[in-house]
Image (cartoon, rainbow, N blue to C red):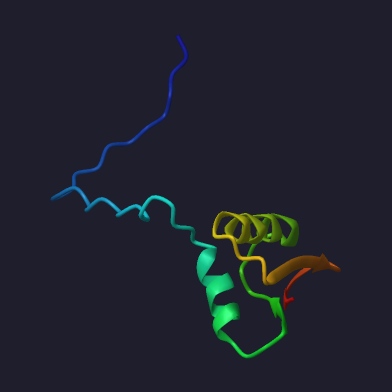
Length: 85
């Protein structure tokens, strides 16, 4: 039998549970909503800490799920761009 290393530490109480997002909401939706509320026709999305391809796919999913046809999501040189049609 293999030994596993572990430690146990005393605590005063368990932390509160993190509340999950309401079903059907997306943590990426605020990006799309902020863009739609802005007056800009073309923006680049920066400082998310996410890969451009992954972020663009998530933003496209938000647009599709919410029937937002007025936004085009694209990637150029590893940068995500949002453009109003």
